[in-house]
Figure: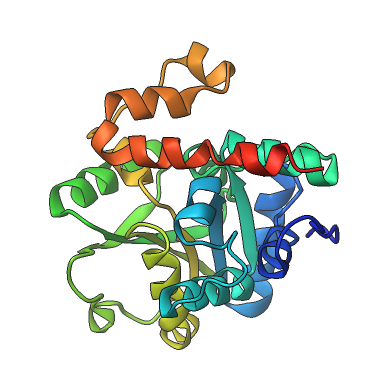
Length: 258
């Protein structure tokens, strides 16, 4: 389920985190996540994007902050760490000579929600930045995947657990958290005891609901096939994505190391 390779050219913390990346395809990863959830009663799934590594200074051995330590803890305590983005694929191609599967959140979450066995009852909780976005995304989830959204809460406020009823037996309860990385991962880890007691399958999903609500559009299919959707996002929403794109260019430093 997880890679045992070590990234000896990188610092120890980053090596440990990257060695936890899932290396199975979407079908097997879906089965693995559902199996862990059924066995434990809860599950934490995070996505790792190369720009996040740099922005949170995971690539810096001697740089520490409260946020960085909390983020590293969240990533290492998660049940699944899924690779997101072409930059991370290139990084792992060099250091472990292995192609990462396509498990980015924008593609994997629709796959996951569409491949839950038809006889399983699913309820979804949303915790997102904006009320309008979260409500439109809830409509998309119901119409596209047929799952019931039982709670859609504004991420600017604290999550209201008291509004969530006890989970019915044999129900898969999915909590999608979109508060931006690393905030969303840290929030999930800080609320681990509550998440476990409420029996949630957690995904930290970044900006996914922006696409599901229609507030942002994905790149044309031809750009996705050429693996340059990152360029489309940087051009179409520079205020939100340009910085992450420029930061990802620091990948070159890792790729030219001997």
